[in-house]
Image 1 (cartoon, rainbow, N blue to C red):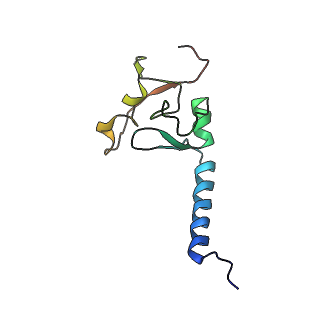
Image 2 (spheres, one colour; image 1 turned 120 degrees about the horizontal axis):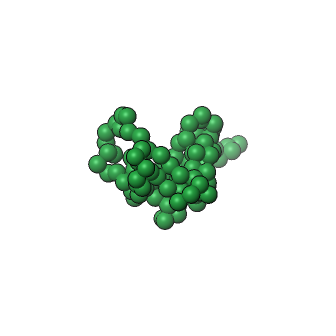
Image 3 (tube, rainbow, N blue to C red; image 1 turned 30 degrees about the horizontal axis):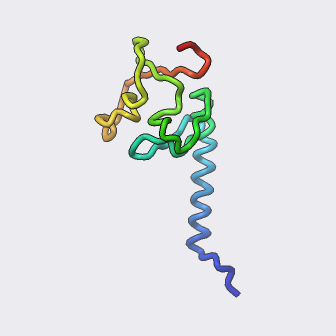
Length: 108
């Protein structure tokens, strides 16, 4: 008698479970966006860093879940100009680039 579940399906589910565990337990903030910048997923460390939990798939939330971003000199940086949103940086490693984020309730 067949259970209707293929060995490949079981392996795929196990791989997804391993990925989910690593994603959620990572000691660093991890998030993903689609090509237009809509946030698809993030882990608890990202939510802690941002100080909020943006709704997944919200088209008003693009490129980053932080409330606001600032450059090291204190000037405001729109999310679409940050490292994730800056399309000119998509295919290169950004070494030594610093940004500051603002969480809700911490001023303007």
